[in-house]
Image (cartoon, rainbow, N blue to C red; front, side, top):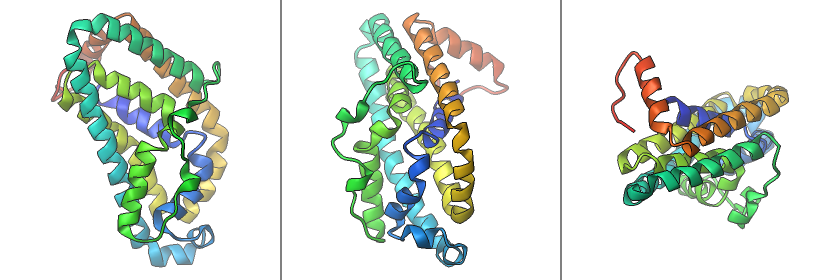
Length: 243
């Protein structure tokens, strides 16, 4: 579970309703290349390496921010270890609310947490600018993937370890980064495939939301350690870190 949950959460985040419909715009911002050229197969073949390098820089930037946030979450959990039961109940309740919001039973507006959006980003094709966009995405546009991201960050506080929290958010970031890199490599074809996959967005959100609700209930009941132990016994190898 310590491996699979954050990685799966990262994958699900990529398919959130505010990333998939905007994927062409995001890659135009990341690379500085016009949307028209990005969709052109011949242009993409000539610029594939450039697009991949910019995409890698972009995902490295948000991975850096999320990983640091995970370390801070684990550290906060350690500092508040004397209040584990209270923290689990608060974190569990928030995670349940985020899950209900994701499946549509609640309608929370999380944009108040960030005053900017991707539309505010001005960019060029320089690599440094791409790195800044990745930082901007992680810090300012995080409400776009808010329900899942914030729930995983709450999850890191239950680990009471900066290293484990950092590892969890690194796995989350990898789950989010891999689709970006794959889309960057197959961009013109991926854009068409993503358009066809939009019909599955509601199902993806429903599964992700149900998973968050389940995790929230487990946290609220202070049974997270028991659940982790069950998953650890099911794995054919020993996890390199405990929870």
